[in-house]
Length: 178
Image (cartoon, rainbow, N blue to C red; front, top):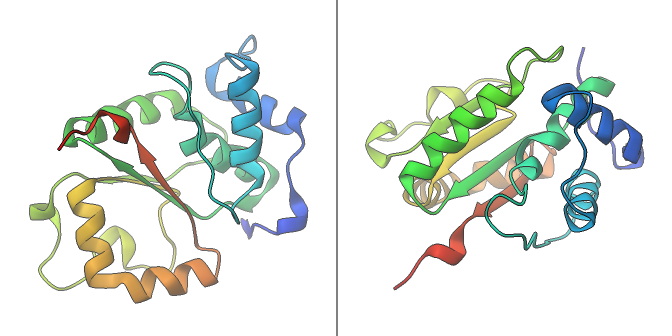
């Protein structure tokens, strides 16, 4: 049984590091002190906005999935994280890389991806969002995120109030130009 996350159940750094090592091998460690502090904050904070300012390849993507893995290892459900990608090709890249990284874990992580508005049903929720449970990680393109919020904003608010939807991450938005 996976229990909902409780704010008093913050993870210790050792638990986060154990999850990291289960994913990336026994020698895995944080790439930098900045990444370490950012991931600790991302794992134990769902109440405030924050920014992880590291360059490409600096390990920001761990903020997408490491909290989920660490909490599930403890027997808790972290709630859904929606990762919004600035480009459609990034959506597919992140899903593939994350699925590869999480393959073979002791705890299953449910990852869904919607990269095009054309993949959304006309007036109903996508099947992956219409059941009693939500994916652990939903990776979407910017246009899909906009359309989901336009159509179902009140539902996202309900999910957030029940801690079923806990995090909205925007990735690589510094690369956009007008």
